[in-house]
Image (cartoon, rainbow, N blue to C red; front, side, top):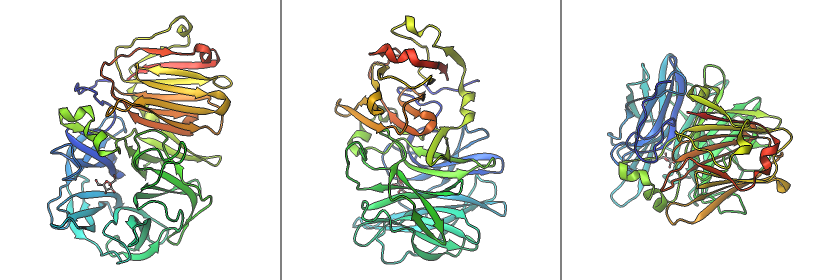
Length: 458
Ligand code: FRU
C-alpha cells in the first residue's frame, strides 16, 4: 500500500491525529452516503484546550483517511467558546449533528447550549442553533449529546452535573429531532460517582445494553481508576428512557494510561464500532508531550468492533486494519536463536498465541515499555516512563482467563494492546528520547509455549 507518511518526531501515521493543533474526543461518528465520517474536537490554531472546532476525516475503509475542512467553527453567540462534543444521525437522507455550544462569560461563568446543525452532503453544515434549555436542577455542565433512534422516538442522552455537584446523565426524547422533551435522569446507578459525567453513550449489543460514560473525580482504588479521568461501562437494560444496571459494577473499558471519551456507532454492516481519544492526561503532562514543539498533539484510538460474547464485552481492532500490513515475519521460526530483533519501521502489528497458556514473562519493547505477565495471578502489567518527571509507572489488570493471545499495534509513540481476543485492552503513549526498535526478553521461558508469533510491518 502506498503511504504518505508524516515524518515529524514521535509521529503517528495510521491513527486519526491532529495534523496540526490539538485534537480530543471523537464526535459525530457515522456511516453516511457510503463513507465513514469521523468528526473530532479540534483546536486548529494551537495545542491548548480552547477554540474547539469539529475537525472532519472521511474514509471508505476505516484505514485510509482524508482530512476535510472543519465541519463546525465556534463563530456564533451560542458556541463562541467552543463547538463541544456531540453525535450524528441520518434522517431523510440528511445528516443531523448535535453538539454543545460552550459560552464563557466575563467572570468565568459558563453557559452551555445543545445545538443542531444539518447537512445534505455530509460536508457542509447549516447551523440551526440551540434546541432547548435544560432544567435548573443542573449546573451549566450539561454537554455531549448522544442521539439514537429508538422504536417509537429518538433519544438524546447528555452528561450533566447536579446542583450539589454530582455527575449524572440526563435524557430527552423527540419525534422529529427538532423538539425535545426532558425525561429525567437516565439511571440512579452508580450514585455519588464523581463530580461530572462526560460523553455518555448507550450501546445495544446482542440484546444487552451497555451504558458507557467518562466520569470525572473518581479516586484511585488499588489497581483501578489510576488515570486522571476514567472511562467505563455498566451492563444492563434500557427501556422507556431509563437504564437499569444488571450488575452495579463500573468496568473500566481500557486498562491503559490514555483512553477517554469514546463514542460508538453502527455501520452499514451492522457492526458496533468505537473510537476513543488517546490523550486525556494531567495538564502539566499534556503540555510536556514532545510533539507540542512541532505544533500538534494527540490522536484517536484505532476503530474497534465491540461485541458482547459469553457475558463479556469484547473490543477487537476492525478487520480492515489488516490492509495496513506491508511485510510479515514469522518470528516463531528463529526466535529462540535471538536475544534481540531489529526492524526498519516503528509501525508494527504483533500477534502472539500460546498453545495452552502463557508462562510468566517480562518483555521490554524499544528499551522503554515493559509488558509483564505473572501467570500465577493472571496479572498483566504495562510499565512506561512518565515523560514529565521520568518516573516509571504501571497499569495492571487481573485477567479472568489465563493469557492465551496478544495483539499489539505500535506506532512511534503509541501502543494499543489487545489481550485474549479483545477481552482486555490497554492504550498508551510513550516517548523515548533515543528511539530503538530493539527488544529484549528478560525471561525467555514463555517463548516455549508460543504457537504463533507474527510481526507485520505497517
Ligand atoms: C471530554 C470533553 C467533553 C467536551 C469536550 C471539549 O474530553 O471535556 O465533555 O464536550 O471534551 O473539548
